[in-house]
Length: 421
Image 1 (cartoon, rainbow, N blue to C red):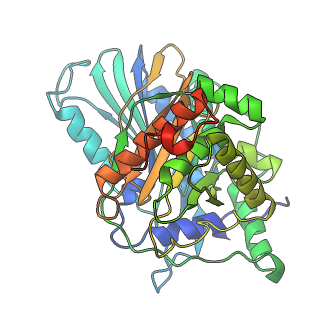
Image 2: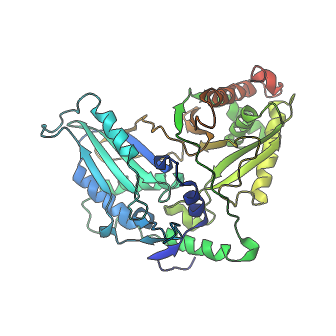
């Protein structure tokens, strides 16, 4: 890809669709990724500050802003110099208290709620901030918040890996990491040129009215050892088995046809693997799953429908299309254990904190993370659109189908999950 001017440049198509969803009535914090970690050991906030500054200088999306035109529409973005757009890095501790004094009861929860609830200023940036909560002299909670416009799920792994490297080598005077071949602006320019050609134009999707406040609920882990065995038998990735269980769980009683939206990375060029930004696209699975089918039969239908969606470019729009008149199109997301973002800070022990910000980007979704030999599902839903009992039933049936099918994939699926809901 040739280089382009990175000061002012057009929106990439995924960014345009994301901004369409950030209309009045939406919860802006739903479009922010929060990464919380317990840190035990001699954490150095000034060293962390230098590492954050180095990361900001390396990745332009971390110092990009999205000002609106006179009519209120965002049509372009601009990149600031690193020193002009530093991240906010807050170290929270009781006022006038000795170093290491813990926060009063309820103080940490209040800090986290305030941190998560403060919206980012898209017009001025930056779109990332860090909160360090001092629990004791050598015990901290570190929370990184990054807006999706600056970093998608793939980007988060890059950010945490490189933040750890910069922290480990904060005293170096020369560049620790090799320069990036391209930046997000190059890809955005290429996107704009491709969309300008009639044969490859990308459809716009009207923004959907906001569905009110969202909820997020973690559900019980689901073992996947047997599901992996079935995946090997059918020569498909574990993802396809999980997607099949989700499709069956989402199948309604009025129609055997199942629709589900699935995010994919959207990084269709090798050079894009090392840079941050918002690349996410969605494939829409659209497959008939009649009653009295076995899980193995359903798995093969889902496999063929998914392969066809990828071959025909059904995932080029973001999102792929409006919801049908007869209901909500649920979202299914899966992250394997090898792509989960991990923070490493030299001299410290770092573990992921199980803190969940209660917000939702979609009317109904199930996000699954692979951890060891199980997947850990998280429900995301808007109660004004989907009642909590309906969302919880989806998660329960997903687990039932997955566990039952793994035991006997040739049994009728309705019997595996104990009948229709």
